[in-house]
Image (cartoon, rainbow, N blue to C red; front, side, top):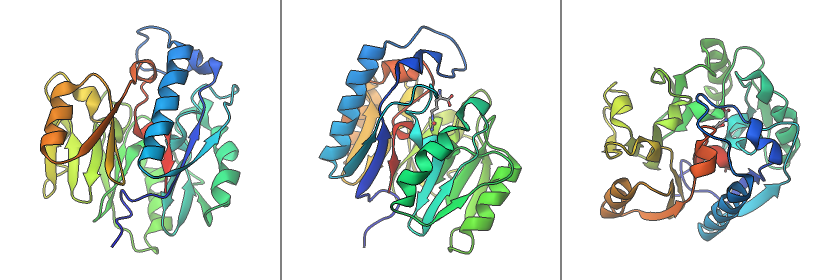
Length: 258
Ligand code: CIR
């Protein structure tokens, strides 16, 4: 049987805009290099295609600096797509921009109160995990649960570690029951019962990866974690993420997969 947690036929991406230099970030380290980011984005799309996914590549949206991080805008489930309600005010306009592209494939539902962003949601075989964060609150989670419970999904609410942007900044699904996770998040016990592979010490930024069909897409520059994944039998593709990392973006943020 196909596994809806990581078996995908389609993905939506959005090209980065030059306005990305104004993208939100927790800490200002340096300005993202737009040309490098464009090259990385091309590599990312190529990797999705290598994973046998049909990619809809949306044009850049200069009005919304963070719009290339389309994952924030929706949760795509086999039963329908749910439009999110971003906790970052500068990102709320991205929702109406993505909606028509999802309506072409899905029955659409919408979060109408509270806040919730896609980066805080991890779907496994057994459940949908949502991390409360600076962007996701209990009202948003309750709204999501109201929509997905009748579809047969179980939702579990967790806490994103302090000073971590999104729940999935620190973890990823490798297969239906295996999680790649930082030690700081795994130590909370939230993945007890799952098989967990820890990111190597000092390679915490490798935790935001994506399993897409037969491939795992991960950020370049984390050799020990990459090796651990290979040893565990995963086919790893490494993509430069230095520029997106400056604005707290990673592999999962850059696409909606369904
Ligand atoms: C933000 O702070 O919203 C962006 N700079 C990065 C978001 C990355 N993740 C995501 O949307 N899933």
